[in-house]
Image (cartoon, rainbow, N blue to C red):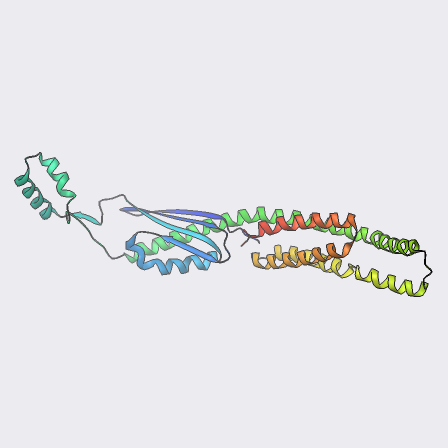
Amino acid sequence: MIQSMTGYGKSVLQLPTKKITIELKSLNSKNLDLNVRMPSMYRAKELGIRKQIANHLVRGKVDFSLYVEITGEDTSSKINKTVVKEYIKQLKDVVDGDETELLKMAIRLPDAVTTEHDEIDEDEWKSIQNEIDTALDNIKAYRKDEGKTLKQDFENRIATLRDLLNQVIKMDPERIDGVRSRLEKGVADIKEKVDENRFEQELVYYIEKFDITEEKVRLDNHLDYFMTSLNSDDSNGKKLAFISQEIGREINTIGSKSNYAPMQKLVVQMKDELEKIKEQMLNAL
């Protein structure tokens, strides 16, 4: 079933000392354009995350964010007590002041606080990977829901195109009769005697140049193929976009051959419907 490239997925993992929040946002793009944001301590896992996401989302401009909130006593930042005490001692030699104020000054000086880069716990990382999968399931569900809206819109517009095509088919004999009448009237206005056999041959040749039988058949087939592809198990926006191009080619040819104002009005309506399909197609996975 067709899916949208627009989506959002979120998942939260509560660990003993921290809360991990994972967010995925996606918009339309020709290929997979992935942006990853996460704390530096997890950077070694970025390549694996990219592969994990690529296996699920295939296409789209995707923003992945991993946020860490410390909720327990565990922290990677430690106060260097020895250094802070030495700073306070030196500050007392420079200025008389309250211990609290001196501490505020000392804590901002170099090396007063150190950051420890601990190794990633593999069990913790497996839990995070599982949570990423949950967020991916959520964004895929969002894309499928959006895809239902796209599908309904495509079905409505293809139905409109088919109705317009049927009007073209119904109108075609009238159009050919009109072309024939105009040619006969043109010859009659010349008031010259013509060879009837030769005139008939030229008339047939001229009318054949404006024949749209093949275009009508091909357009009908393309509309059928579009609906078949739309209802297939997989979501293939690129394939539907290609079929849309073929639909447009037949519509343009009918328009150029019609030489009949009422039919050209129908062609304009068909082009308008197809343009709306192509706009929506930009967001189809």
